[in-house]
Image (cartoon, rainbow, N blue to C red; front, side):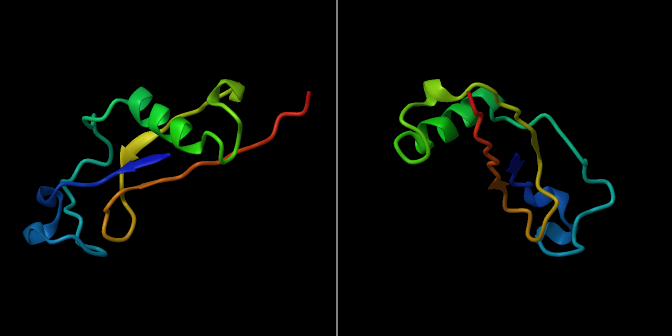
Length: 85
């Protein structure tokens, strides 16, 4: 899950914080970053850490959204599951 940072214009008086999101702020949006580029970055980052090579990855599900948590600074969540042969 890629939670993308919200622009200041989405917040009351342009100041991020809990309960400061404008009612008119979009809940989701087409954000600039391509999902495939974000995914490739994560896969490359985990090479030699969680697997020998990202060629071992057999399935990927990607979600990209605007962050709605805390200060809405953005985050990345990665969930892994081992596949038995």
